[in-house]
Length: 230
Image 1 (cartoon, rainbow, N blue to C red):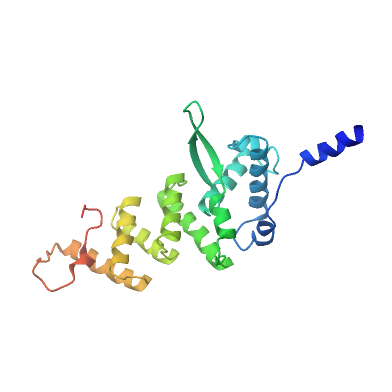
Image 2 (cartoon, rainbow, N blue to C red; image 1 turned 180 degrees about the vertical axis):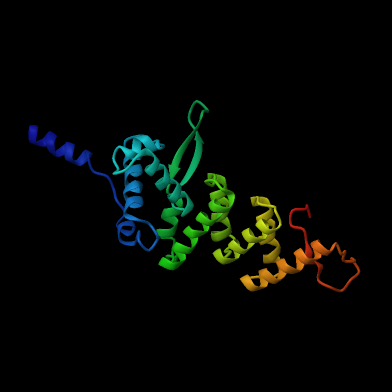
């Protein structure tokens, strides 16, 4: 009986791991520490805790609570981890970690993993935004950047160009940057050189105080003030 109970304890102590994750995490731009963090969060989920705190997770990592917070922030930036909400039976709203973006990257048919260079470029993009804003980005702001990258398929270089335009215009906010990117996409601007020329024309027009007649045959969209409502 004791041998049987020992065998059952061993079985109960197991958890399912993704072979594909272990084989491809580097191709997704993940570090060894980030992989271990993912596995620890999964382990908490198996134990009935879907939203462990950084302090709880860091007990099983080689680092401080702050180090764990940075790892979680990095996973969110890389669109590997998201924070979701759901109501329990009593109607109370609870938060939990979800790896749905990770599983989509790993198991979506025909999905190509980003190259090491692409992954590094995307990671540097978040660092650049934090440097310009002078603070860490909020989860909502990180999600906005990920939407630009994944859903809108904006190249990191063009997002950086839009950030630069916002800085030059003194309009450093996500709403302004989003309007710039949408307007560029509508006009077929897909390169940094095209974006730079459009920005120069717009800033030159603003500086000179000239007005463009609605009846003019010129394409006035390049002088559009993206902060104003359409």
